[in-house]
Length: 536
Image (cartoon, rainbow, N blue to C red; front, side):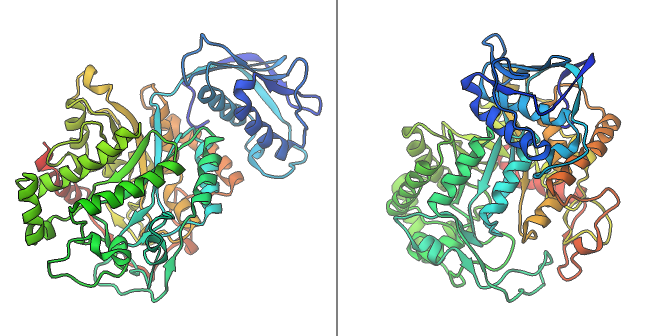
């Protein structure tokens, strides 16, 4: 079972689902009941209607901690106690995991014994934020694939989907006030064919975007699985798609290439200017984003904003003097502060990558620490909440082995065991500081993942390990985890997930046409240390 419950005691009894089994409970848990009934009905064929005395019952119990649950299986049935919808849904997922893996099939499975072994479980997550970032900007993912991905992460008790919606290579969210963001910024003429810097393009246009109704459907679908969708609009850097649509928003008085949506991977130097009209443009963008996404946290990116254009621009220098800004780090900090004020006034919280620490952190900001743990330590010591997502531990686009067939290998090797060994709370934090580490998250950057089956390959089973890290409180036991993972692969098979096998890629998963750019872990750590010197 993944993630493993924190406390489970076997009972010398069992319960078998049948045509006579009833399922129901407190109206507060309607979402969990509806979801688990749908899962069980599809594979078992049983109606599982509510009854006067439900064999599978969900009961509201205020004595159970928030997000926790108690689940008991004995000869009488399955009894679930929780005090909130989060706990009830986690219990529902656990119930499916106690059944044979075939329960995850979407149509009737015949000849299967649906017996559940007796057990008494008391369980609660370690972190309230158990997340995964999905980059749908580099490669657009059709909505049906996003919904399927939500289904799979829900089975792992992950509860945050961070959607990276904009980047140099595409703008994927409809903003009705500014239609050119998707009309022009939503597609590119081709894509770089691999990770090596010298490779050419594939000659194939790529694009797509989500309408506001699409995104509302994604939000509702995720909410029915107790998953919060956190949107990210990445500014002030990663702005080439913005520049293609509205060139007046970027620094315009420095030498640069054309403003077409970028067709290369890496970091483009295009940045937003700091005129009040540009800030107002993005206040309006975020107003529409907040109408779509009810999440408390709203992502503003803030990462990898190359400051060279600000430093070379006469108009930026004049504006800096007007605002009393001393250097380019303060320019980025000022820009993020404007967004923080706007989001805070709307009752939301700004969420950004750890570069937002540079030049001074906005008062309400929550930091996603991706460049090692230095950002996590700095933010937590300053009293800011942190999501731990260091690239050397949880970047699932990184290659999984030295195998020559790894598809478009980039970054250092990152194995399932490496992800499982990840500790989100830096040891250097005091207990008072450590409470600011509110979650852990894996990040899936899709430069080299042009379809859902490729995302499957890179994400799983490493994402299973992250789910365990974010949920479990016990000391790590790699052999025990690996044994449970071997059993869990049958669940992934039933869900149709094309995960990476332990012995490497299958021939059709290789990409000999798209060379990568692998690096050693040592060189990557040295680069990260240099990049984060100014936030130490």
